[in-house]
Image (tube, rainbow, N blue to C red; front, side, top):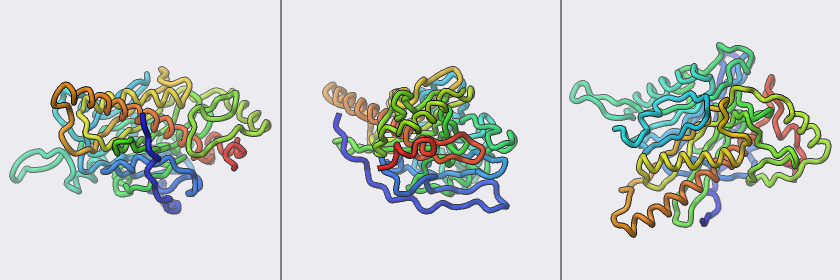
Length: 374
């Protein structure tokens, strides 16, 4: 299949800092250098914005990431891990009524973190965004907000310090095109094998102009690094090189330590191509190939690996005749493969963009600075 270069994105603004009176901050900046090589962003897909809230202070290491599609997007999901924590996934089945999703919430806090969806819904309702219900004086909206969680309880020191509804509302208010990467948002308390995990994003443009993007929160049991070379399994725009021998030795020692038994990789693939719910489900399913390419092993009983797929495209999806059906299948395959490719890159960027967080595991960039130095 043919690719064009990723859509260019501007450098994110400088980080916002949390005050001493607050346990969290709305985040729109990367946890590492704003000059980091770009692989594009899920917000290159028209109609998609991302907002994040990061809680990183004494006793706290968690956060929330919201993928916002206020105009509505057709959605699908594929849950592969053995220990998922999700919300509104049954609604995304192709045989169910509601067609459009208004946001997807990715969050820390394990099952407790699902409380963030209430805040997302409240903020969207305030804006009049949602599935219309009632009539006359009882007219209202019900925002459709599927969600998935990662396990990060206690990684900041206190199990009780976890995302609440306020995190979801603030993430919606923070939504914009610039996407923070690394140990921010839902990736703040994430662990990638035995290294600091995080949030990563990527996008590509197909030869026909369709945009495909992905965002991943990597909190995996498996490792993203080849222990033989000390390099990630999946290449990115970072052009990682083989670390020096001393750094490889330090990395190998870390990789041999025991990984957390309660982990998950979650995320979203989005496209500008008009898709049905069934087609979105297929794209979400194929996107799991990206997890398997970037993380080894993947989809274990200790993971809750979940991928959502969103289509923001306008127009009537689906074929008109047999010839169109074949062309449609070819286009769908191209979108699905691009989604898997972007998801693999997004997973790897989550690792490479993450910096060590006090109280957390070391980051790849701290253990192997020579791999990223050019």
